Image (cartoon, rainbow over all chains, first blue to last red; front, side, top):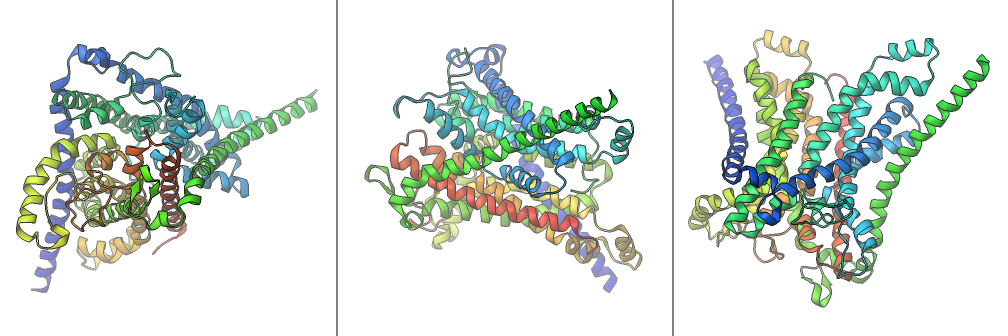
Length: 282
Length: 312
């Protein structure tokens, strides 16, 4: 009798955990289903390639990639170099632990605050007056680049640190100077991890909206330069979803489908090309 | 010749080292700049509003009266409740994943968990606004208000866009964070101990209860705090579904009423704000940053403690 009740408890726990899992997976499939269903209703060739002024989202797609590209130019090198420092030079000492704490803290700052920083330092500084603000995509790229630094830095540090010391010692034995050892040997072996980290950081900033709201603002036209307001998929979704006009809401779903495709595609690519997760420790 | 070459390498080495240090310094400098910028821009508001900024209930830019308490309360309540609701759900998923899920389904399941974390918050926002809000309004809020609406916590009217909906969306967004870390912790349960328990006749649920969960407890706390940090700083999804009404919870206690958070107030107001209101908004951001950094720091130091610790 005792054994039976324990077995019953085991079955109960099993079913409960299954139900909880299902209860969380259902919203995910629901969101994906809604985005695909409502998004496809908006999609056609001209929707994807014409600018907002002609009822499309083409300039917003391009804008998202331009802003992300600029953020990468700023965030990836700084992230990689900081990660490299932490892995190869910063094992101990107050400076290294300060850098490490800073990088970790940077990842804890809400993206909205990074946007405020870019707004206060670039937009307000460049503006003639409070009524005539000079909005620019460069400020957005600064905020998003700041988001990338800890993500790329952590990925670089971790993928360089796991490389066996044998390889470093072999390089030392051959008389290779440390900087060549670090860049041509250790980094070359770790480049897969750096690349995955950068791709995931790219996916992550692609979905960030808060830092763009009051920096790049929005534009109805194709971008003609980087130092000007620029449309992005994220801000388009936000503005159109809140506008309440049914045709704009439909376009917002169309943009959401495109944005989701970028993010999901990167996540799946990374997963296919990396080892299965949840096997190693932190 | 040889000596000269090694001298040259030494120079290159130290140049490279100082280059890396300079890059790290830039990162540190940017971090300090963010903090200083927030602090400096908030100074007029700190000076003008004083402590009443933290206790005031009114946000009136026309008369330069700024009280941030409703936004602070909205942020803390929505994030805390969402995280609390997410804890049992996340642990349940993690147990299912590590103990019961068939090996083949694990790949798909872990992909789902990753995707849940990867979906941009603005997409959660549009989904919450146009799909969930109307559904929740007619199928959850109205029946509950009809049945037990005399309790202030569940009183009407039903708006759809409410602190309740914000908590629901935040819960979904926090779950993958806690779940992913809990799965890692549970899969590191010491195998010999687990095998020992099973050989003595323990069921799987008993090994989890008496071995897996106690072993992972500290790490799960860290994961929960990390999730809380995410919920505190979340902007877009919350802004889109919370209804942005400034006086909750001081206008009434109903969870079905529209409310506001620090992030949604900033996102909504900063574009048009000037002068003292801008300064007050940045003081709110400063408060949020201090809370976020504290939460982040606690979580990280707990994680470090768990990874240093050996068995048990």
